[in-house]
Image (cartoon, rainbow, N blue to C red; front, side):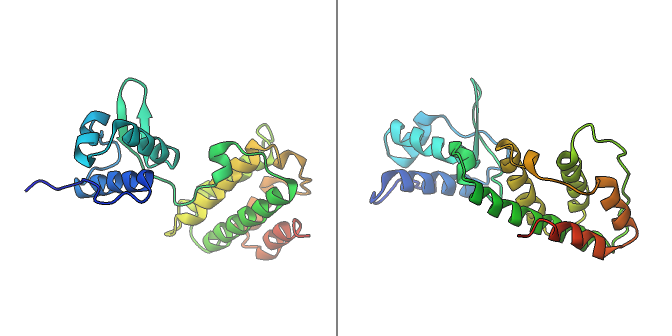
Length: 203
């Protein structure tokens, strides 16, 4: 018997459309990269107008649940576990807000480094400032983060790092060490030096 995806009540139409599209993806076991039916077909399945389907698809695309390809259709995507609304709407953030985001980002970076310091993780010295401290630091954090079972630490670091980079926030931070100094401290399991680095940003 075919599943019935029709909406039974419409207190808020766009929410119901979104929920039903997600239910359809789940029930039909559509994996990442799978193509959704065209708007006309979804409109028939949900028994709503094509404009309502279009709005639901647009919102799900903003939330990274779906990916629209020009001339190719709409495909299932893998939404990130954390999403910062201001990145979606390109909202300008105040200094205090960015300061708070930095605190959270550094908290996750410190957690990643300290959780992997006792693991057998090989690291390479960069000996290069061509890309800037924070670019090299993020590469290193990503290298270490891949060894953790909980990938959310790395997801959150990357999400906030991108936000701070887009707002040119990191360019104004004074750094009193080098990425290689931190890597050497990591290699020597010198937690005091690493902790001191992160504490240097606290107010």
